[in-house]
Structures are given as C-alpha cells and as structure tokens.
Image (tube, rainbow, N blue to C red; front, side, top):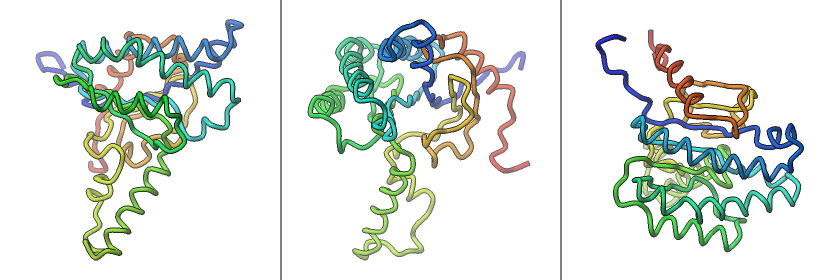
Length: 237
C-alpha cells in the first residue's frame, strides 16, 4: 500500500521445472537445458540479494530423479560440479551461505567432496541462505525425522507426549530455516513433487508456465507481487 513499506517474503522456495522441455524445443540435448538452468540459479540468487530476501531454497535433484536416463543423471551431476566450481567463491563473497538439504547416501565421492567443501568454507557474512535440495525427498525427510524421534522415545530421553510439531521440525533437514512464505513452480505443472511437504503447509503457491531457463528477475517480481496481494490467514479468519 502507498506510504507503507512492503515486506518481502523471508523465504522463497522454487521447484525449477522445464529444463528438458526448454532444450527439446530448441533441438538441444536435455543436459544443455540443465546447464542453462544452472546459470539461471545464479541470476535469481543475485535478484534475491538485491531485494533483501533472506532465504532461497531450490529443488535441484530429487531422489526420484535417479530414475531418469543414466546419461541425463550423469550430466546433472557434472553440472553440480560445474556450478560450485564456477559460482561458489563468487557467491560466497556476496554473502551467500550454502546449505545442503537432502540425503548424502548414494552420492558419488566427488559430490560428497563438494558438499563437505561447501560446509567447511561457507560465507562468514550471511546475507542470503541458499538451500539446495539435492538427492532430496520430502517423504524420506519426514520418515527420517520420525525414526530419530522414535529412537529418543525408545531410549527414554523423551515421552510420547513430548512429541510436538516443533520437535518434528527440529529433526528435518531444514531445522534451522523458517518455513517458505512463497513456493514458486516453473513449467506449468500444478503439483509439489514431494518437495518440502512439511514446511509448505501454509506457503503461498505460485505457478508459471515459464520454463526454468527462461525464468528471470522480472518473473520473480511477478510472483512476489502476487504474493503481496494475497491475504495470509494461516487457518484463521
């Protein structure tokens, strides 16, 4: 509203969909779509820094993505290495603090080395938390949290009555992060694809037909503008 400061969403989560379709429409291999998509992540990180968004979570690789053709999976893994080799130091200097969300089991030694390097050499000044959901599954995340809490009960550390929503949240990969205010999905599909199932309970959803390689700062601004027009009641009146 005029005369009032517009508060940006504190946490934006993005399901980056459409890399393969973007490449196919141009007669290019799917891996080229993923390469351009990796470049787009950098652009959107800078846009979030400029707008004062504090948390950005991107869905980079799900556990279900292992079902894709081996060549495509190999290409995505190569792009993960490309992204961190090219952009980690640059974004770190801008105050981007990297967070890995997901399971490390099944990842190659090369990818595990990237994750360890990221965690051990992260930004000191934290202007933006960039959480990368890689080898991630929302259902697996919740299942793992339940197992950890069940172990606490079994050992006698807590009682069943001590289990609260807050306790469950503390055992998720995203334990130190606020829940997303805004969930964006590119590529036009209307589903959440096993992404942050617990955390998006009251997130505002915004879907665009724009494919991820074509997603821009302007598209992000459109999503945020729509977010500002919505009334968030969190189950109340």
